[in-house]
Length: 176
Image (cartoon, rainbow, N blue to C red):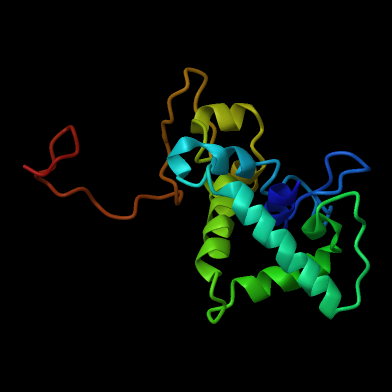
């Protein structure tokens, strides 16, 4: 829940269910959580899998400290960061990612993975992500492949040719 709440603070989305505590529902549509941020972070290639539990312990500790500073009473049935209202989650993340914060690298790194999941579906093939309705790729208007799964662009992406081909360009697009 803590990892989901952090990802949702970076790229907010709508709640998955009315009683969802990790996703605050601060934005319409799917955010980082629906885009697979946790799945991406847990992949062996992220290099973070073994450290995530420790990061979440640290984050919840920061959330408890933040709540104490601001006179907030946290619901003890969920992790401390999850219990923070969205505005306070955001304020804490701003603090943790500030240039002067000694743990900045950890929190910025986790934020980057949240953005990566939303912006590129880095944890899955693009075709599979689009077929599954990946919210980030759909939000940025990523083109779907043709029925055979191949991307072809019969029209130029800007709606016009940007320049003339060099006269010595071969049929494969290589310069002669």
